[in-house]
Amino acid sequence: MKKSYIGISFVILVFGIIFIPKIIDRITSGTVVQGDRIDAVSNHKNKETGLQVIGPAPKFILTDQNGNKVSNKSYMGKVYVVEFFFSTCPSICPIMNKNMVDIQNAFFGNPNFGIASISIDPEHDTQEVLKQHAELLGVKSANWHMLTGDKQYIFDIANKGFNLYAGENKNVKGGFEHSGLFALIDKKGFVRCRKDDSGNPILYYDGLEKKGVKAIQEDIKKLLNE
Image 1 (tube, rainbow, N blue to C red):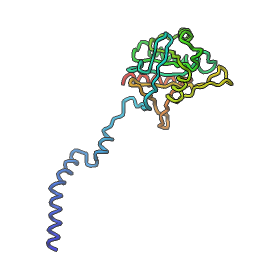
Image 2: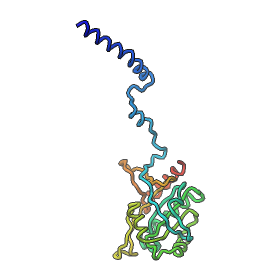
Image 3: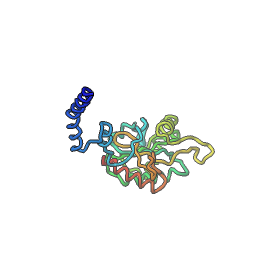
Image 4: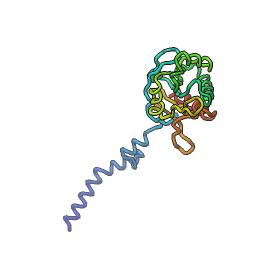
């Protein structure tokens, strides 16, 4: 029995010598309940914008209204907005384009902001047609590119790249259908967005309603300051 007590006492003594100072040190430093994993989480700071990073925007190379080749790399270092439209659209495009002009005017003169308007009817919307359309709309920014190219390539950018629907439908006026949403891209080429009232990422911004336009303008300002 005496040997057992001696053995237990020895273990307690060793524990006290090795671990007690460490515990006291952690208590005094305020880290007594933190392990490495908790430290990593608690030390992580969200970006000041509070905007979600959805993922990298799809790559593309298209031709703009001035006949220049424009790609996603052309926008690196810039915050930019993407829309899909076509110049003869009889329904939502005029509203989207008008709202995009408002966004252009809000950031006009800022070299770090741009717009990419991609036509889903490139067979009609040639470079010359888009140049006339840009003048009609009031496109003034050198960083607002109205883009055309191969139709299937553009459909893939919309549907597979951004997951924003675009397609042909001979049963609707104009012959095409597409989303009325705007995509917001940051300076590093990532799709960004805010959260809704339930805390879920909205993914894209409503390009038809003033509320959506106001929201994207607020978030463009945040990303420009990142």
